[in-house]
Length: 397
Image 1 (spheres, helix red, strand yellow):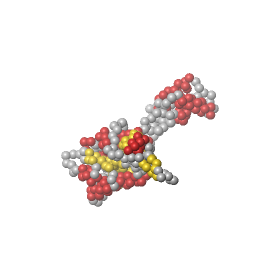
Image 2 (tube, rainbow, N blue to C red):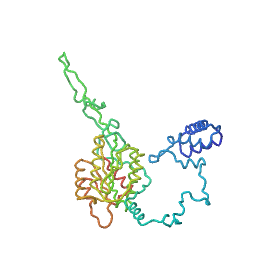
Image 3 (cartoon, one colour):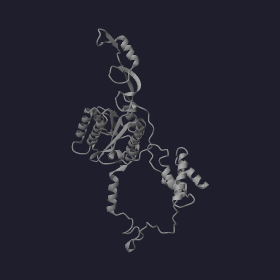
Image 4 (cartoon, rainbow, N blue to C red):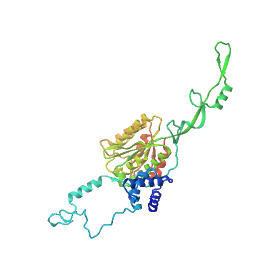
């Protein structure tokens, strides 16, 4: 293992931002082993590349939304394994050349688009579009107004077994509240007869602690992914907010899910999860376009929360509906959407409606939807990443 190989290993480990010296040592030993296995007396850059792929991916520091694995392009650049520049005098191997009958690129066998090809391309591109979210950001901590009894976490106030003592109660189980027990016994001693005697014995008036900590919540986003959202470039802001919520959920042990609706149906794009590695790619690839099946979206969200309650009955949920309230898919679309809203309100699901309606003429359907849901109505001026996250975090229940 020469000096050049040691320098190359150190450069690779530094470039991939690994912790400590263990990665350098393991990479060096692996490179030596690979060279010996290949029958070589010296370590080459190929050996270092193989060793780096085995020793570094799980040791490098990365953010929750970073892709797992290694950047192969960066590794090739560090080790000098660049592909040779093409010779301009050499023919392009991918160029089919002149077509039959001497036709060039613009001839019958070339690259000129035919009317049928143009129609197919336009139809495929106009149906949907995929917005790219901006970088997620760290958000403020908002807590729920009520006190729950859910899974231990770092968000909302809840009655838990770990936390600060806020009161005392009479119960058969739980940690004993010693000061409260002494006070209760002194004020009202408990007397009970002793078997075999005519006297009484005095016992303790036991009091148990009421402990308040924090719980984790389910935040389910029900997002309008119809053509109006794509045309007005709102999906970028919504995706950024969702990714920010996922990052915050990762830090505070929350669960986040995503329901999207467009065309003629709703899809559970992201089942309730804490895994940002699974969530982030699905959100980035979320398309938008088509009509607005609002009723189907609300019903899918209600069903998702119902199933989640069966698995975790103590985890409270908040439904965030991002829409302008217009329902355009199917017969009696508006009436069916209001009926679905009534079903959600009857189930006792907390909700927020973020109104995405724009323009001078406004129908006010989102406000009407919020009224039927018993939800807070957020005006269109707050439909951006920072405001959407603030609404969700402030109302998480």
